[in-house]
Amino acid sequence: MLALIPVLLWVGVVCICYRQLHQTSTLAVGVMEESYQDTLECTDEDITDKVVFLEKRVTELEKDTAANGEQHSRLKQENLQLVHR
Image (cartoon, rainbow, N blue to C red; front, top):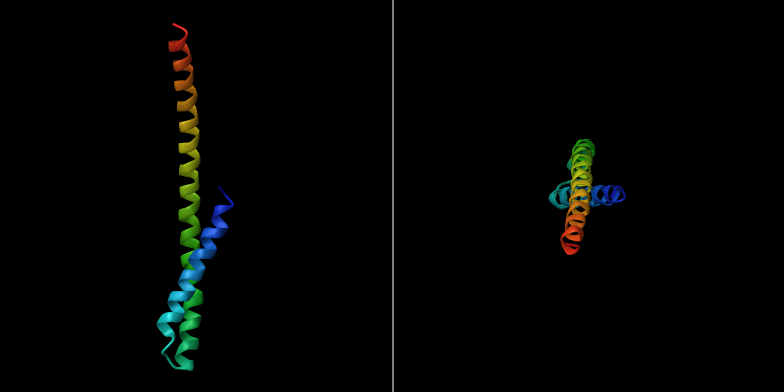
């Protein structure tokens, strides 16, 4: 599960960079350099926000997985009891 975080971060960075490059492709070189600096600053904040979001989501999914495992075990035990009646 944790291995998914770097992949998602990489995809997010690629999307941000692509979008920024696409938007600035028609601008002059000087303006493009300023835009690139802005992109770097925004990207750090965007990545940090995404990391925090993904960490929270991983925690939620781990809790859900544990709860589902407990429910599965309980239902399996109940089914065994019903079969042996």
